[in-house]
Image (cartoon, rainbow, N blue to C red):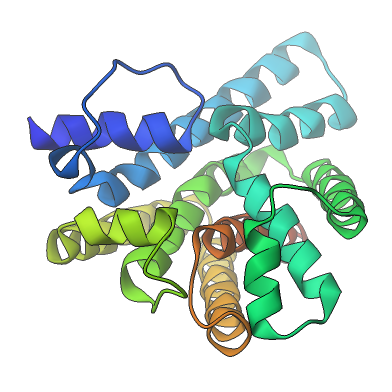
Length: 253
């Protein structure tokens, strides 16, 4: 029962999919981060369905790419894009770490965040329009990989504060079980990536790990540790980098 409640909690927090109401307590969030990659499974399945619909209707690459871009945002409710925007604002300030942490907490959106998000979306649509049908299996795995590693960042990396969403998620989690579950889920999606395309699949995994290492360095050196915004920033950055990897490495195979 706790596992089911944790799955509902994960979808309630990290997706816009309607879920049954549950009591928000420690038992509901104990394994929540372990269920986080399941949101990516749903997104990946919808990407495959969208590709099939576009092929059946004869839609062009631009409309198809727009779907690849908007489906993850719509399904996640934009929660991770919010982290991307906040970190862009904080980084653009070139301020001291304490001030950057204050900017992350500021509910207002700055000009640099708007510019950065617009550039991100343009880049994502452009890259997505170049994804061939034979690599759709790899693309469908991207949301799962990003959420496995974002989950690792949440439960393994030092946090910047004892307060906030990330600290709350970590404090109520069964860390040992969550870490093992995330490792098994990452192993499963890694196998799926290699089966879909050995060379591209391995390149995508390496790219995601490099992005995680970069965000860990950024968090530790400039923010004093991970936060919910930085976890969202990592997820969006990793997905864009993995998409670029699919396009460029895909040209070689």
